[in-house]
Length: 264
Image (cartoon, rainbow, N blue to C red; front, side):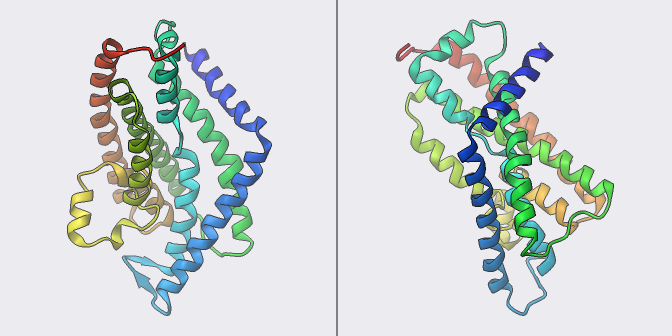
């Protein structure tokens, strides 16, 4: 079974590689996003040395790595699941000798690897020629970031699985999937670091899983927190992984009995 999932990861990676136009446009888009946010935050900081607990240099690194992280954890498996349900393909997938949700997760991982090395990597390189920012200075810093990034990928994928599974019950949830994407980008710290939100909002967001998607790994990358605090944030991510797993398992159990094939 392990070989099956490794092959699924490889096939999705090669599929992404085949679309060269998306590859080149992806690099440009990520470079533009990082550059635009850098100049925006430069204007917001003005002559101030620190805002929201981050220095100008740390914010520069935060902006770059937030988009770099998104390149890895982002995927559209909720849309893929919805399409499979509407077209009736999921009925065939469910009788095959593997777990449908695990297959989708493996495919998302293959896509994430491609995006990380071929979208984010070149994008960061292009931006680094214009915008100065610092990378973690120690192997420990890189290790903590990569562990946190992997947890972020799993949490975001679980959120997408939940959204995708709702199609079994709602049949059409396109609006919900679009709203989910906006909410995740906003509340994960991609658009605005969590430390910039009002105190009451930070308290509320502390009970939600979204900041574990982007804010935690980005904060670890900037070096704005200690190693001990980094491990605490990773611990929170692991807790959220198990918490979100519960509704996924429950929904999947009911979804298999609820399935109504719309086509195929």
